Length: 114
Image (cartoon, rainbow, N blue to C red; front, side):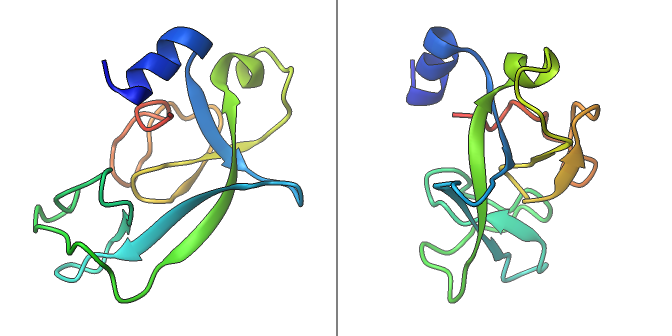
């Protein structure tokens, strides 16, 4: 069982939501050198581009960040945490909460939650 699976088992599914001024978690993104789509820049997350399948470099020349809060999906769905959108951890697209998958890369909103 990896860390993501262990976290889901112990705490529940989490989803990345836009952070307020007190947000502390970061998602790092960069551009695929082959097709220029946005990809997660964490080397442990993706080895190949989700769009074109090209191998991603070990280090990107430039990266950009999204400040997020990781919150329990149940808290969002039950209204205990107010948010209108979630970030795809794979491609960085901001999506409305009712959408269960990212329209850009087709990943589910909780497939990337730690």
